Amino acid sequence: MRDLAARLTALDPDAGAALQVIAYFDRLTEARAGLQSIVRGAAVLAGCPARLADEHRRIHLRVHPDGTNAAAPIPTAEQPGRAPSAAADQPGPAPTSATVEQPRPPSDSAAGQVDEAWMSVVVADGALLWLERAGPPGPVDAMILERAAGAARTVLDRTRHHPPPADPALLELLLDPDAAEPSRLKAAARLGLKPDAEVRAVALPDGRARLQSTATPPPDATMRAGIGPAGPIAALPSSYAAARVALRFTAEGTEQDPGPRVVHADHLGGLALLAAATDPGGDPIPDVQALHRTAATAPWALATLDAVAESPSLRTAAGALRVHHSTLQERLSPFDHLLGWDFRTPQGRLRLQLALALHRLTRPPSR
Image 1 (cartoon, rainbow, N blue to C red):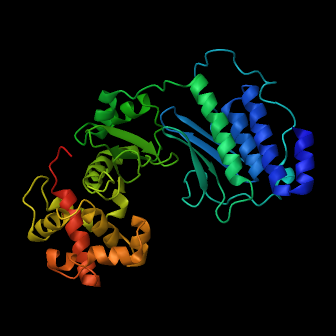
Image 2: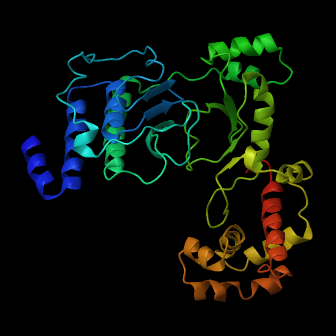
Image 3: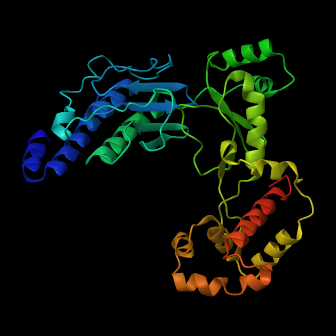
């Protein structure tokens, strides 16, 4: 493989570097290397800090591009089967960042907060791997993330397949605004939260709640969730209350129920007041009734109006719907009359956005 990589590098440096990345993480996997070695490999190859966070399994790793550890060690966990030896974590000479790409300055971002501009990849449910570099990605960054995530997924499947579930009673106590502060701090400690942890509450449609630290990935779009503001443990009850409000603004993300599947309370602003003034299952106002009448005319009507309301232009909305611009114009032509107002004007578009928000807020609580 090394000879092939050397010959390929002479012909195409990027292709040769990609092959070295593949070979490196394959060797780590074959040697049953641990997560620390995999994250270290990603950081060294990319030339920037790399971070792995798994809230469910309580794993937080961060490694500098020089290979030094910048995060807490891997929590002690039972590892069935053969434990990786020290030699297993050294599967051979790791290609340095210089063999893949020229080293670049490490990110100046704080170690605690995740920057949305960083490249990331989902490793497993609740686990995400980042390369902490904003700006244009390197020529093999995507390959590094993909291969490192695959190797890390193998380790998680092998060693931490069944994460310890959070005790529902402790979680309920932690989110209860009437609980005494010392009791909630004890519950937080038993759930593995440090006293100075920055954490937020997550509300789910089935009534369950989750906790999420600021260093872990947000829930993926496969599930509806309302995300509360991050803050100290003492603020978790208010975070959960805000998360439940945010959950009311979510949708299934389907043609029949278009809209965001994940909503952050921090992003609602004044819309949160709209939720306070609206009861789930309450009578819809005339604009929502008009929206319902329009939605009943075609299976795609509601999704079309949602795309128009959320897009900066009709052309962008057509792209989001994957239809031609002229097709969208044809679809929209009868909607002015059905709704009773011109949604193409700024005022009409705001009215449509409010009608869509109220449509979600007045749905029965079971949805």
